[in-house]
Length: 358
Ligand code: ATP
Image (cartoon, rainbow, N blue to C red; front, side):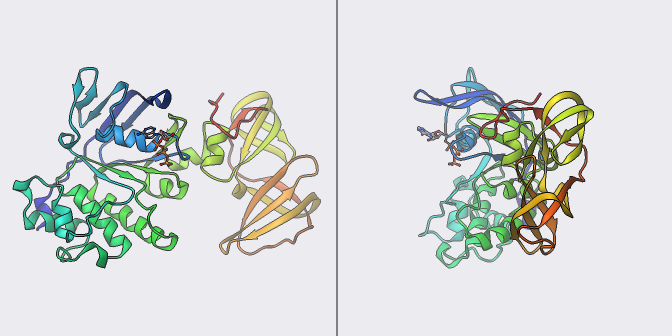
């Protein structure tokens, strides 16, 4: 009943042609991004690629040099438009949560509300949404890391924003708590159905929480896709390696098959000539005997990674479920057992930065 006091109307975000430099240093370069209602988009990229700057620009904490931003159909940034951050109906949760230690939970949640709306009922409604009903009088220091994170979320949700922006929301938590809090927040975002953009450099986090993942590199969005599409069809060799373990093997294509050092590999699209193909470690199989040597074994409990040296090729990573079935020094054969895979023009496969797909 209390919850119904607080309605979260899921909004949209449309970013077009956004450029931003700090001094001579371009940080955002021609960013286009559309976030549909109730969608969670993860901005994933290495440190310094501009993720936080993009989030802060959407929030109105940075002014872009060019480009426009619409929130729920209204232009908040444009050639002749500038809507102040507090009028954008955006909730933001920062990396460090930024709770005031001297204010109780209610004081922290109420802080973001205009005075007239700062009622106990409204604060309780926000706390109920994040499953912290009844904790209004507690001080932040007496709460667990996960609870503090949810207070920060309640504060962002309390004014009824149309979109939520989260900057590295789990980076303050140690690794065991991180997984638990991530699941809790995931459940909350699904329940509340609020349109969300969050920043992370952690692929697991992006894949678990994101309906879509936008991969950024040096101020650009290199690819945006649903996690499973991104993993199976990365646009560049660099993206392939950034979103998971990737073997990139040279071969020679003849239609929809490439001949490689491990044999025939089916291709997603037909081509001819020199190519580099993507082989995910879990799509490879090992059988005893052959001329490939097991160099290293890493056992993870649920599966085992083998690093194997091909007789006529590079080291390859192979992931097999369960406990190790081979030993170091064993001779084996590797074969590809996965679906048709993506290919890139051979050589100069650039794994350090993006290069656009063929
Ligand atoms: P991280 O994951 O490390 O937080 P990020 O992808 O979020 O990185 P940003 O924080 O957006 O990256 O920073 C992008 C670049 O812009 C970096 O080189 C950073 O040093 C620079 N930068 C960010 N804010 C400013 C600022 N206010 N003044 C000058 N340079 C800045």
